[in-house]
Image (cartoon, rainbow, N blue to C red; front, top):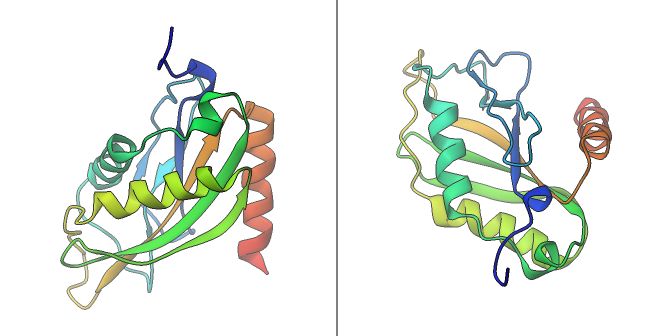
Length: 159
């Protein structure tokens, strides 16, 4: 069917967390796999509310458009990092790691940019100013390949 996005190429966002994160959302991926979504708070800042990560995930996913390369079956992954300020604005968006055609990175960055402003985070500590977020965009990747990608990211973050 023209214009139909293959189910195995559906977007799977995984927001990784540092050990200080308490907010977790694990949605089923639209390709049948499971993702683990969390918001990673910097400077030991914890967000209040159980649905913050779920809301952020849903907004970004709603703004994402699959690049043509993914629709044609190309595989790849893009990991981006950014901060959500107290005002909900996305700050310091950058690509942490990518593999695949440039259009996949462009689609990932555009999805986050178009999502701003995001909901304003409510912090347990009033001194906190921002929440750090890492989002993985997987395109046509098997579960095993996604797991390898995530293991490699943990190695990168440890160094």
